[in-house]
Length: 494
Length: 101
Image 1 (cartoon, rainbow over the protein chains, first blue to last red):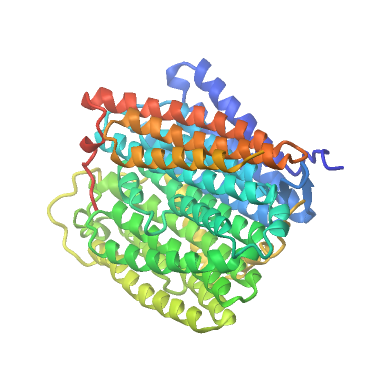
Image 2: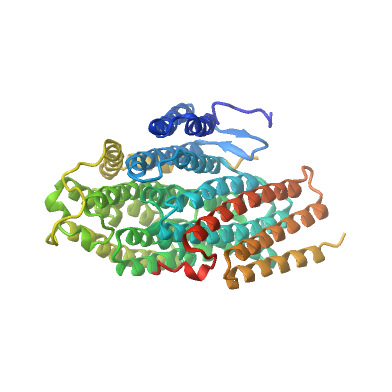
């Protein structure tokens, strides 16, 4: 029954879709003082969409729809859970941030929900067309959200740079996809996997794969396709930056891994060295550039470039060594999930800290812990976690990465592991620099913001969720291994 | 049917689009270059489809999706151009250099 639709399996997408319409209608009909209901509806809809996911996890079945182009398996369910929780936290961070703005409009939530729907579609796509639609639905609304502060020229610039490089990458990706289709006559991943066996020596195929990798490279902001990221991250509103660095990056990663792992396993000789180079360059250049940043958001931007490199390591290493990709795939997904949790927290801290210091500069944060110890502790938790210090979640991400590299074995793998290890040390320097500034440096005069005011309730909840997950995964990594194991149950559809 | 001439046309259009995107300074012309690249993709897809003749007309379906998304993308792009023009009275990308490194 290829055209039968399992409505439970796509219930999260349907709920988000209805929420989008509700938010749009609320924004249209509510008078201005009641517009905050759009935020409530968005948060409620996202939380509601988690319920059918819980059922699907318990149910534990592989549902394949539309001729195998849309598959709901454990991998898809787990990633949808990640996307929904991350979006939920971003919504919570947005509430007070957007209220303090002159522009309070429902379109903000409408656009974010549309982007969330795209990432949900992406996790289930097993077909180039569905993947393309999902990817565009993720990034399209984000071009507009990056420019949300219409009067701010920096925000304008962020939006424009993101847009130009985003559409360029889409065009390159599509050109690669059109060649893939032309050479095989297939668009489903299962069909492609079969048809591309033994085509690694065809020049046209090599070109197609390289186009696809370059297209995805922009989306995940891997070096040398990263230069839009710091500018866009700095200019965009901070909750959007959090969303960009977590949801949008994770969506790009998932798309890339799905294509490589499910559609093109026969061409590993072509894409593995390219990913290896991307991983090594992203880690090294991302970290070196982060060293000289003075702005916290730009520092986090380069840190996310470097983290993207770490995420690629297990997959690239195993593919180059010709080892079993399943283990590496699981390690990459574990890294992705842990990175999402701690990075969200780091941006939450940036929002809370900026309310007090009115500054994005690391120097402007000096001595913050002396006036607000709780916030200081949170800064330490998230930044040390990003650096990979036990017992915070980050250590397990790095552990899973190195473990899968050791399993893969081989000379090229070891070289990559050494590069990763050196970079982990470099990264510690700039993460610790922020913590040092907050805890050890003296306050340079008064903080311009309201130091006494506690963060709003929703921001506290957002920080609470992130800190709970960061600490819980650190002490009890089985939570993350569950995600990794789920990603082993991945169905190619068809 | 001869496939090559269409693929060469597609590749030429794509290359022109990349070139335009890199050297043009006006944002509207950059948007046009992007359209050129996306249309190169469409020509590729349609040419492959009429050459391969797949059972579900996949190439044509793909091309229709690309056309739709391209239209939406240009809408977004023009909205961003308008926003920038209101603030700066210029649509030149060289003016967008507040942030570097």
